Length: 186
Ligand SMILES: *[C@@H]1O[C@H](CO)[C@@H](O)[C@H](O)[C@H]1NC(C)=O
Ligand SMILES: [Cu+2]
Image (tube, rainbow, N blue to C red; front, side, top):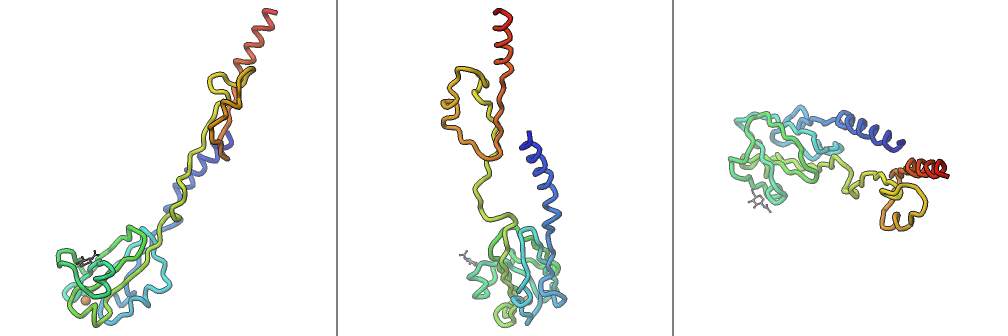
C-alpha cells in the first residue's frame, strides 16, 4: 500500500514539471536582433538552450531572412532553396530536438562576410537515455493457492524478478476459513 501512495505522488509531481522547467524565449542577438556584423556566438555564449525553448529572429524582412541549415551549409554559408527560408521579419522557432542547430541568413555575403550565422547546442529536456523504468509489480504469493500450507513457494518465486518497490500480497483468508471448517468438523 505504501508503494501505491508514493506512485500517485510521483504522478502528481510530474504534472508540475512543465512549470518548473519553464521554456525560455531567446531574442537572437538581444536588442540588436538578426542583422549584420553581430557576434552571434558571443551572444549565445553562456546561454543554456533546452528542448522547448524558442528562438525569436527579429529583423527587417526586406534585408534579411533565416534558414535552418546543416553543419556543411553553415560552414560554407550555402543557403538552401528560398522556399525553405523564413521571411516574416519576426520568426519564432521552437527548439524541438536536442543537439546542434545551425541558422544563417541566406542573403548573399551576409553569412560569409558579415557573420550573420548562429550555431547553438540544445540540451535534452529529459535526462540522457536511462533504462526504461519498469513499473512496480504486485505479486500474489503462491498465485491462486495463496499463502497456505503445502505450496512450494520456492517454485512459485523461481523466475520472478522482484525489485525494490514491488508489493507482495499474501492472502490467507481461505487458509484460515479452511482451518475453521476443519475445527468445526473436528
Ligand atoms: C546540407 O544542406 C545543403 C543545403 O541545403 C544540402 O545541399 C546538402 O545536401 C545538405 N547536406 C546534408 C549532409 O544533409
Ligand atoms: Cu541578412
